[in-house]
Image (cartoon, rainbow, N blue to C red):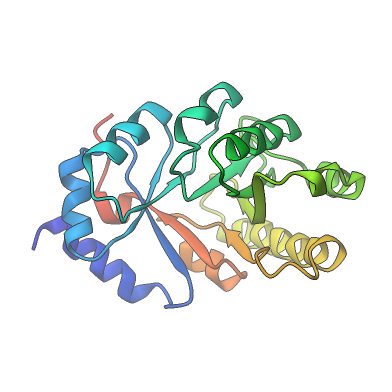
Length: 223
């Protein structure tokens, strides 16, 4: 078995069974993804539309492709026919576009709403206040081509793991509040996607049930 396949299997053993492991394969060649696939991996995360489409064409068709990067509305149409989950819906405009493309493809595309919880201004997402106000306004309920299935966030890039845990804990609290207020009767609103190679343990400790692991599986990227 390849090194990549071994690392994926080791990570899968470490991550609890009830937590989805997304192998973040962006910037790595399709051959390396195939090594992870042959070891059992079926969920891959990509952050560039062109790269995702090329890998979707080249690799086995039972792979679940997650789009984890910042998605521009004008690029949604390229991944709408096949994407399994869009992690980072960060504006009402993007959600509306995903809905439009879902309807065109006779699909209800699963999405997560991105929460901006980190201290870096460069990260995207709704603030907790913006997200609550958007959901309270209610127009999203009319969208039939999209399914809001939970929240996604990235913590501040810091070595202070107490701060990281506190940020994840705030997102868990927000998830629970939104679930109760807006999704109490919707069993699909259940995903909490946070945690990466350096902080996945802290994330799971604060309620994450989907982690996005790249470096620990594929090694340092070359781009």
